[in-house]
Image 1: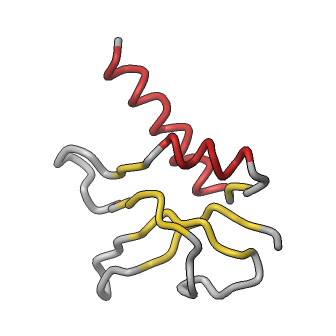
Image 2 (image 1 turned 60 degrees about the vertical axis):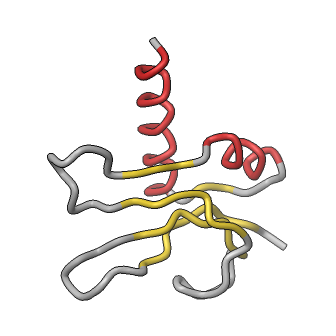
Length: 88
């Protein structure tokens, strides 16, 4: 069972809203997820936080063999930078 960390769309037409999930690689984009790790709202450009991720759970799943997609990997890197900046 190959797992991926990827985005699944839950928003309305022209109002995208995504969940960052762990899902089996062969499942559909909006199919069943193993676990929801966070959210991403690309339309919140200037209004504060665009994404929320549980980095502890992300590390857990990566440690157990889940591979992030390109987009999810980018969000994870941005969340890590934001968490380091917030603690400094």
